[in-house]
Every structure is written in C-alpha cells, then in structure tokens.
Image 1 (cartoon, each protein chain N blue to C red):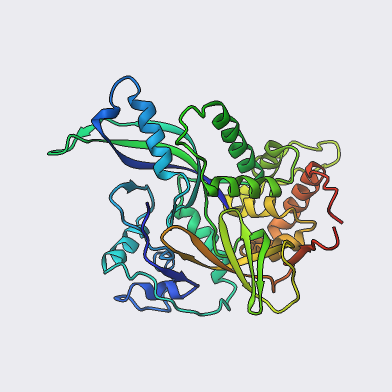
Image 2: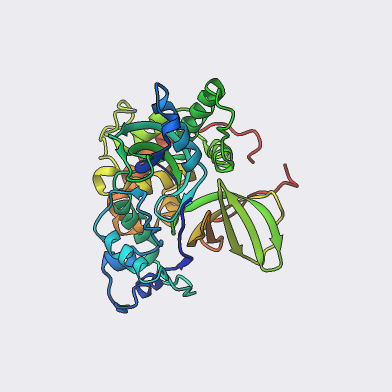
Length: 228
Length: 154
C-alpha cells in the first residue's frame, strides 16, 4: 500500500513546497519537479534523476510536502514544461500511446483468463478502467505504423513526396508530446500547436514534418460509426 | 498517459511458500500487492507485464522471512499537467462536472450545460495525490477542447 502525503500541485506553487527555498523567481528544473510527494517508502526503489533527491528531503520534513496553493495557471510557458521535465523524471519509462497500451493490457487480460488457477488473483478495478479507457481511445488500426511515422525516418509515400522531411523526434519532440499528438488524432497542425504549446517555439521547423506525419497517419484511423 | 516502466520492490515471503513454487508464489504475491495501487511517482499501476529479475533472497534476522528484491515491468497510468485527455462525464453539479479517464477522476469547473456520459476533451491543469488515488483538475476553456459528443445525439 503506497502512502503519500496530500499535495496539491499547481504551477509555481511547487517551488513553495520546499520551505527553506522560497525562491519564486527560480526557474530551475529541480524546484519545479517537486509536484508529487514521494512516499519515500523503503520498499520501493526507483531510478530517477537527482532532483527527486530534493523532493524526498522535503518529504522528510514531516511529509508536509506541497502546500495547497491554489494559483490558476496563467503563464503558458509553465504548463508545457511539465511534460518535458517529467520526461526526465521517468527516464526509464517508455511513454505509450493509448493504442499501444490497449494492446498490451488486452494481451494481459487474455493471459489472465488462461492462468487463472489462483482464485485469489483478481484483476483490480484500475485494470479494467485502464483497459476500457485505452480501448475507447485506441483510434488507429495499426499502432506500429503510427509509432514509426511519428518517431523514425519516414519512408512512406516516396512517390508522392520529393523531399522527405526529418522526423519529429530529430527536432526535439519528446516522447510524451508524441503520445499526446497521437492520442488526440489532430486534424491540422494548428490543433497540434494549440494542444501542445511547448512545440510553438519550434513552429517553423515542425510545421512541415507535422503536416506530413498527420497526412500519413490519417488513413490509419479506425472509422468510428458513432462519430459525426 | 500510459507508461511502460521497470520498478523494483522488496518482497517478503514467509517460509511456508518456499519450495518448487517459490517463484510463482513470489510473483503472485507481487501482483496482489502492487496491481491496483497508486503512488505519486508513477501513478496507477494498471498491470504487471513481466518480471525482469528476482534477486537473491536475504533472510531477515529474528523472523525467518526472506526478502527478495524483484524488478518487474508494468504499465502505469500517470496524468500530467498540460496533458490532453478525452474523458467521460460521470457526475454533474452546479460547480462543474466530474469526468473519468481510466482510473483517474478529473474535475472541471465549468458553466456550460453538460450532460452525464458525454465525452469531453480536456486539459489537465493540476494534480493531487491521495493515499490510493490521483485526482486532477482540468479545463475545457482552451482551443480545441470541449464536448466531443453528447449522449442525446447518438
């Protein structure tokens, strides 16, 4: 059973979680990373960057951790950093698109029905909810193609395109952002830049590769009979 | 968002489980302990996909229990601030509505008429971790966000 202190994290307020360092102008990554209160339980070890060492020290201070600072997120530059910074936090984690997660979880469920010799192993509620959610949002017929198009050098449509643009990953789009793009099934690049504001700074470079990527993955979408 | 991650845990096993089924007992204990839990670091553990490594067991002094460090791969669901999600409305009240995306509940403060079971696309603007669940605050007041489909029109 994981035990975590209560914490309400909003942008900027995370810096106030370490009472000894109340430097609101400090834009260091370390300060902003203290979003979650680490349980600090000795049972679980986790490889992450040094910033978490700081948050565990805040947990040591009576586990008060994040104070409930309700500040509405006004500056947009704070929000997009969250996805990027947390990518470092979960460095050894592979970010999954909903369609990929659906395949994996479905596979496990199929396995469980075969291996359900132990009657006490029951799949938890979060498993079923996770399965349901990922299947509802798995909108592509071929998940591997989608992943390839968004990440790796594209060799699709060689006849149509005379110039092959570089991949998104090459331009510094992180895995988390790629997953958000894939999950959202955007119709246009405008939508992509609106949903992932951290890419706005590279708008000029990413415009073309994004257009191509969207064009290629559009036919891979499942046709939904209920959608308008 | 879903992640595929490797975690490590020290599992304590009672000597009654030793024998040829030691590893199986260890794995089932791990699944019982971990699946369905939630923590701030990595969110909800949705499912364990495999065991990477089981280390050497250490006998604890005085009790006879043995501690095994186990490395396992699992799928976790962890919502991030700034993430775009599609959720289903579960409850509406005068302050706004609650929506559910996977195991996570999200509250959106909103004054547009919305119905239960409609699908909305929202952005997460804040997260909070409780002992066993993660709770989020979201918004639909940005570009390309809002109601996707109504249960009445389908």
